[in-house]
Length: 396
Image (cartoon, rainbow, N blue to C red; front, side, top):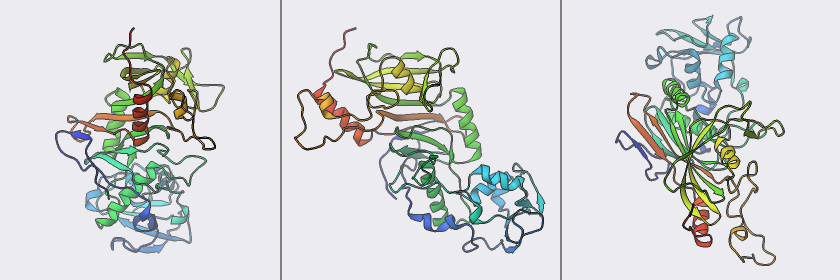
């Protein structure tokens, strides 16, 4: 584990701030749920009852711990099989590969004391698990209901369709939950991380994660009602005419670009209403560091709105004009050494999810906030700009 500095406030209490999430324990612990080794002695292996999908196989009988009474069946299975997604587990329940007291049940069945859950699928039937990245992922804030991860740029939040074996944040969070359960001698997960929003792969910064079903529902409702405030730092091309310190709004409907899959554009006729609040954070000659608050949550919203307003991200292959930034592009009369390839100052989106604020879903009252410091590549770029394109007074 690594311990790092603060960056979060929740009701005045100092939370546990950081935990190293790695791939190291993928080979053991709860990751091998198919065997009975290390499991609670209240379970036994028997032949699969007739009528289930995997006839001729083996079935695992799971008694309901006292602290899990009242939990929905699919939620209970998520804690037993941490690397299986809920859709897969619900399908197993509906197809009678999971029984309650020997009879089919619904995924939303609330478990009662004394019931026995019979599971008749094997480890080989489980879908491919999300992969944890090799590097550590910092936890900025954690309490009983939520955690906030500091996602590095280049790390996808969930497994990518064409790169299923690549590490992702969800894999790191699941692996960390498994490691904690192993360390504390639990026979099932103490909690299962639940994503309630996402940020782009090449965007760095704070990502809010629920730790239980109640928190997930409360946070999703808060996102829908505008009760969660996110702030981004965006380094853009051009010098914004906004007055320093004053907020402005970009109101422009956003919809998919019919000419390019995966790209969005401003579409006032068929797009969805979208709003982004913006403010000048720092000025440079030819560039501006903007603070952005997305009021709505459309795909690529900040990138689309800034580009539409004439201030695209400094590095953005989809909505800007470059995929990397070289020192020779911003430093006048600079030429790299002959025969030496110039290394980019930045080769990913100049966008950082700087902070997120929410109300504690446990009590519905306590304001909480977590802040992700600028990553080294972003900080280096800003320092370089300060030297070669120093801020200048803006005259409107």
